[in-house]
Length: 214
Image 1: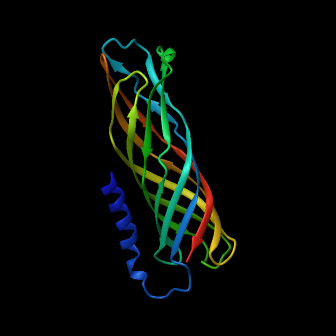
Image 2 (image 1 turned 120 degrees about the vertical axis):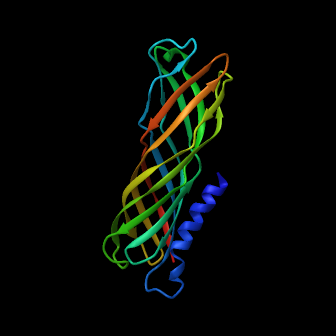
Image 3 (image 1 turned 180 degrees about the vertical axis):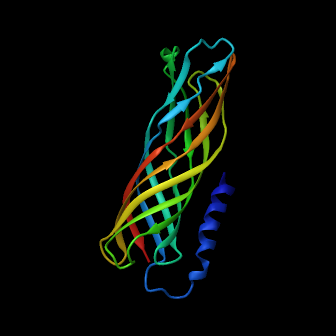
């Protein structure tokens, strides 16, 4: 997991390495803020020995802190690495087994690399932008109140975002964005029996915060 984050960071920095010479606009942008994950999860049902027909599951939404570094490789193009404090995602039994309540929880570690296009000029106070990229999702600290041993596959998927930045002065600003991700993971729970489900969720991620440019 650490190697994956390190590799994404190196890619973001290497892509902008040619900008060592002086520019008339900031090339480094650090952002910090709050992000809201609306998971929009779907499963293919829950299967396993002794699992009744119609068993299903759903996941909760989450809020956490986010930290972003963007390297401007031209006045309009930026390469962005998104990190943050891994939010806790909880899974609840649904359908014919909804009486079980919460059955699993995990932390979603999802570094994301984006290529952004910023409209307008660097001197503009208000600049909308759009971006496309890739996210890697790893589920850590997996556990179940029922004592099951939980396995969850890592996931790679596309990401798209749209947002805007607003300059307060030469270095400080505000930003807001909305992003959509694709995450798909097979979940296996091992207890008295083995249960399986595939979680396919398309998080819609709302983010807002402050930025510092230099």
